[in-house]
Length: 540
Image (tube, rainbow, N blue to C red; front, side, top):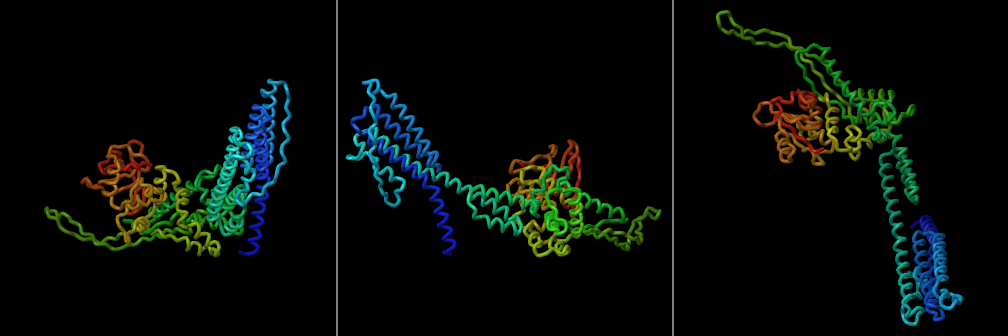
């Protein structure tokens, strides 16, 4: 062992012993006084009442001092013994011996105490080595003395055991505090982790609490403060979720504007927008590490909203183009004599292509010229161990609430092609992805792991799961937000499509669906529509 480390360890142990020695000495002194009282109990010159009073005092002195010493307080141990002795003296003065002959007997002088050296490992029992019921020892054959001796031994044992309980509890609290500090330090930047490591050896719960409080402040001021931004901050600004919903609506509006600005005969859409987790991670990194104007990522004032929009649209792009092509159309026409004649005509068709293109977080970091420290911070924010924190920020999914899955679905409106959903499910190429979308949303909220919603890619599988679970509702039921709605377009008893109920006003069901025109979008149906097969009603 390194000499410096050994010296520090020895010094710490010596300090610990020095703190414990006064309490130990007080307990030993109480034991010696009790031993002397036990000797005096056996004195035949004393009356029975005097013996009883001495027994009471000895018992009280030892037990009171032992209890106080178990909490490590020398002063309390001494005062407890003094009070016990005073109570015992008062009882003796009221003893029956005064009534018997009117004499006042003096207490015999206490014999001179001898100091014994206890063998190693019996420090606390040394003061009670003469207390017992063996023949030839003081108090032998005296039931009162024997009872006091037994209680003295038990008090010593209880003292040692009781003293260990607060120590173990304190150690447990220190370990819990250190674990919490390490958890926060993991979320902080390198400076926060260094601080936690430097203070990890500080003893005591108070020091650990100070460390945690400091780290909370450091975390909230860092990019990791984004994890505290999900709810209402009470500052009059919109919440992060509200801002995210507004930007999603702006994204959908831009798609509609592109359609309106470009006359077309048909629309073909492809691609997807960036995941909000990545956009927010880039925003938080950029905002909190800007050397000119660092901002926290917790509140959403106008300045931070503008920065978030700038980051989002730098990572998302709409590529719009219109292609014209000549098409020969064959038309059947009546020749005027009751015959159908094929005629062909060449016409021009306009196809509007809208492609959603997004950058990854790494591409955005390169575009902003992030330093190596900023890039490392970005990677930490996107680490999979913080997925649950991201779900809580984006969807409030730290609690069970049917609104969580609705928020998760709403955040995806505008995505086209379904690649994020069918690839997440495990497919290597495009499939009909409405069920994959529902499963993805449920997974984002932690419902699949909790067994609340199944993971399914085939609609009839989802129907059967809810029926087996006793959570199936037929058409005509008034659905609740978060219910899973299944459709049967052909009326053949087999589900063809699935979505998520956003709301219901009693007559119309409003839904969010994936693979609706190969996109994520809102739809609505009459509550009695024949196309509705039924509902899965998760037990949120």
